[in-house]
Length: 187
Image (cartoon, rainbow, N blue to C red; front, side, top):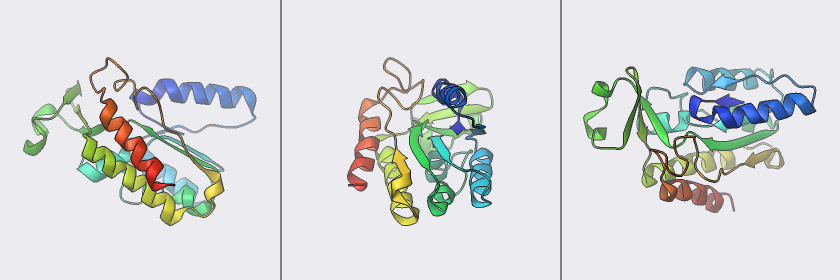
């Protein structure tokens, strides 16, 4: 299961449910670029039986040039292997950059959140959310060996704890466009 700080409540609930109901071991991959790469590698090596890709924020960083990209092959391994795979949109409301002073000039007028002195988050726009949705759809259409084992879960009420109603990254239009792009693309 993939996790980020802003998706931890969701991941904790899923992990608790799985470990209480089933005899499973849940590995958590922190979606910081390295976590996504490790997940992909372990799936590719046949070491994991299923993936709950709840936090796909690394796609944002790959497409928009953030610091936590897992590269262009993100999402492919589980799809290619045909193992059970649940994809969701956790933390697709943000691109991760370093210190506020290091934000690329063309992004400085965007909605930014200084998470700490070394990490600044940038809210994804409607157009960027469309691109993220198209990336996910293309990966599924191109690589899903067994589409019956792939589910896409679309969160309601925000894609992270800071995109919920009333929070700093709330943008229902962007989140809705992301979900609609995926729904339309997978019809």
